[in-house]
Length: 381
Image (cartoon, rainbow, N blue to C red):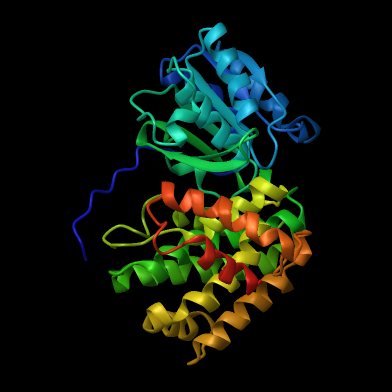
């Protein structure tokens, strides 16, 4: 196990009716005015919006609103939020929704404290040195944005889906009430499950050092997600399954699983970002297409870990069987596994590869993931 520093300053408030206390949690941080960020309005239909407003008003928290965040969050909406924050002396950002809303809230928190273009942080032209405080109330578990300092945004103009990372945008407090997630569609439950699994297995397979303890954590998360997903597809109101899914999702990308590892990377996310950026594919749907194709291409580079995955997850001695079974499971829960299923034609692969290779260069993976290599991977999909 390698040396590491593990620090996660996010406080999780987990359980039923915790959303009713969000105003109290914000007030405890000495904050008096926030920007409330949410999506297309489902929180109003479910009654969550009213609960949030009552809690804010009860605790004398002033607020401005930014609605309309979409599932592949856009830079244009982030810039709209930044302007609102600057014009109204906003002290913190509250994201109420799923990962796209929280990612937007984080980007707004960074851009509100910067005189230049917030995109500078995404292309490594600037380093994050300060940010507004971020709070969240989650309505979907997938990205672990509620307990990490990561944010992914699509630049509308350049069609680049890039990310930022800083402990300064770890949420101060995140509210996780599994009951709020019961209205998530079966489609997005499937996509969420794929995203969580991807967060775990990418470093699991690519790290040059991956301690047994870390591998066991990853395997536990994957098993939990697979089991609870199947339960929830049958009964969306199973609170215990929903709670276990939500807690497992958080562990998938809060810094726990890669601690002590070395050399890990996120090539599946890197490639998928191009599917989202160029074809507006839902992130989890894009991952369920990319992951099996990537595994088929990469397996020979870490045979031992692929065999371990086969044995621990699917009780098989054959890594090829495990890849096939994972692909079949994605299909079973309703996630796509081919480019055709997400309406991407074969002649679109070249543009996807060019776009993904640009991100590979930003992430320092350009040598391994050339345009030609990415084409080979996508051809397997």
